[in-house]
Image (cartoon, rainbow, N blue to C red):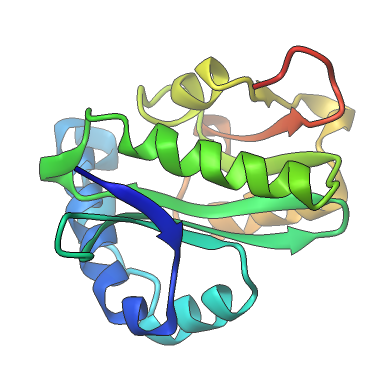
Amino acid sequence: MTTIRPARAEDAEALPPIEQSAGEAFRAIPELAWLADGDNVSPERHRALIAGGACWVAADEKDRPVGFLSAGMEGDALHIWELDVRLDRQGQGIGRALLERALGDARQRGLAAMTLTTFRDVAWNAPFYQRCGFRILEGAEVDRRLADLLSDEADHGMALDQRCAMRLDLSRAGTR
């Protein structure tokens, strides 16, 4: 049984190991396996994101985090910085539940959209978000903020042609 709840400052130390565990899935993709050995978001950064009020954890029956979604307010959008579920808990709908909670919060705040950057062709990245109602932005649809994020990611070794920016318009009828 998993419960989705707002992240608390004391959860911050538990989040980098979840990110590390989730990153192990990239070992199955030879050209991206290096991501499994990459740096994780620091507990300090997690505490700052938690203080912003747009971070949630999936907690087990003992209230220990097994997944999290960290986001931040960026203009009229809720931008997802990170969505991770511990490798041994993936495939159970936890990521989708976290995303649904963030979506509900964004709607409650009256925001226009949710945004993120991710890998185009990794099954648990863009294809997952597309199934949840996000669309890949192309060309002029990619605003300066998202273009800068993609550029920063390229500076950190992520091939631009493998990455994309995505958006879920919250004002559109028929979105989840």
